[in-house]
Each structure stands twice: as C-alpha cells, then as structure tokens.
Amino acid sequence: MTVGIAIRVARPADIARLSSTLGTPHGDFFAGRLPLQEAGLGEVLVAWRGGAPVGAVFVSWDVADEPEVRKHLADVPMISHLQVADAHRHRGVGRTLLRHAEQRLRWRGHTRVLLGVDKSNEVARRLYEWLGYVQPDEPELCDLGAEPGRTADPAAETYDILVADLYRGGPGWP
Ligand SMILES: CC(C)(COP(=O)(O)OP(=O)(O)OC[C@H]1O[C@@H](n2cnc3c(N)ncnc32)[C@H](O)[C@@H]1OP(=O)(O)O)[C@@H](O)C(=O)NCCC(=O)NCCS
Image 1 (tube, rainbow, N blue to C red):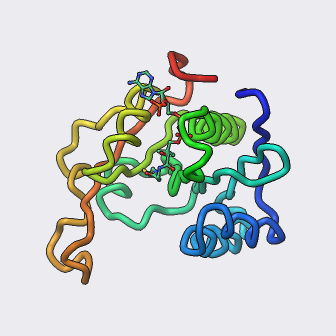
Image 2: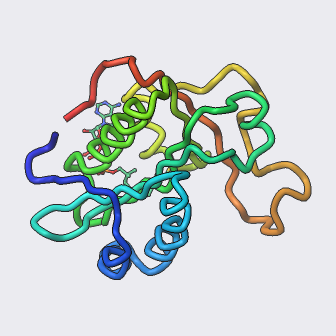
Image 3: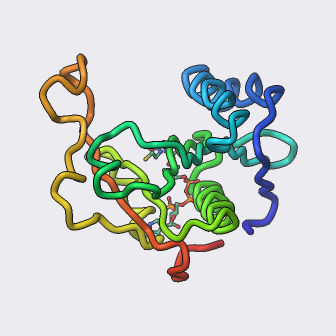
C-alpha cells in the first residue's frame, strides 16, 4: 500500500466530507450508491490521507446497465467512478483504490473485473492499461453510449469497456 493512504468502505457520515474534497456532483454520485451498498450489491471505497478523504471509487457486482456488457461479460463485476481530488493526484491514490477494489473482488470469489473509460480520458486509460486492463475483442464493447436513442445528450461522451484478470500480477502496484 502507498504510505499514508488508508482505504475504507464508506459510511453515510463520510459523504459530506467527500463532497467537500471531490465536489458536490461526485459526493452525490457516491451518496446515490450507498443504498446499493446497503443492499449488498456493491461498495463505495474511500481513500483517506491524514484524516481527510482524498478519493473514492464504486465497485459493483449488480447486473450491468448496458445490454452489451450483460451479453459478453455477464457476472463480471465493475469498477466505476474512480475519482481522486485534484491536489492528491499523481501520488498513487488512484492505483491504491484500484488495488483495494480488486482485492475485495478476489475475496468475493471473482476472477475478472471490468470498467468503462471515456474515449477522451487518456490519463485514466494510460493508468488502466499500464495496470493490465485490456480492451476485449468484441466490437460491441467499444464506443458505448453512441447508439441512437441511448442518451438524450448529444454531447455525451462515448466510452470503451476494459477488462482485467484479477490474478494477473504485474507492474504499477504501490
Ligand atoms: C485518473 C485518476 C483517478 C488517477 O488518479 P491518481 O491518483 O493521479 O493516479 P496514480 O497516482 O495512482 O497513478 C497515476 C500514475 O500511474 C503511473 N502510470 C500511469 N501510466 C503509466 C505508464 N504507462 N507507465 C508508467 N507509469 C504509469 C504513473 O506513475 C502515474 O503518475 P503520473 O500521473 O504522475 O504520471 C485521476 O486523474 C482522476 O481522478 N481523474 C479524474 C476522474 C477520472 O478521469 N476518473 C477515471 C474515470 S474512468
């Protein structure tokens, strides 16, 4: 683990502090996932440094929203909304959150994990690929969100699904 970072499952009382470091929209996103956590369908993991929350991620083993994911990657859990506060980036927090998310999925008996990355998000994609995430062969798992009628927002970003073996080992782990 990167020195000085502790990862814990979120409690409702953490949300206000997460909102103040990550911004209200992200705090609201994680608040909206707490009922799923309560229902046993996923977990919000929060990274703490020096007593303050500096990042968070949601891990879900619920049924995926996207039909393409349900078709090709049924039962593969998902990591979503990895978010690190601006002032704490480039110091291993993102990697540490991913490492813990993956560890918790192994404990639950999963062997693979997936995530979606926006086409334009080169920083995140570089990090995921460096850590061993790969684009699956199925073309249907690329450019999601571009299908007619899928979103009312014409400016909405399209994204690709990446997948990793949870027992791959390799570089990048702090
Ligand atoms: C993407 C994000 C979570 C990364 O968080 P982070 O805490 O900065 O990430 P880390 O420090 O653990 O990892 C980044 C490091 O990985 C390493 N790394 C990544 N790709 C690498 C490569 N190809 N080769 C070697 N090292 C690499 C580098 O050390 C890099 O550090 P650098 O950013 O200083 O170059 C953060 O930038 C963020 O919150 N972005 C906005 C939200 C977002 O885009 N989330 C992803 C949604 S899919």
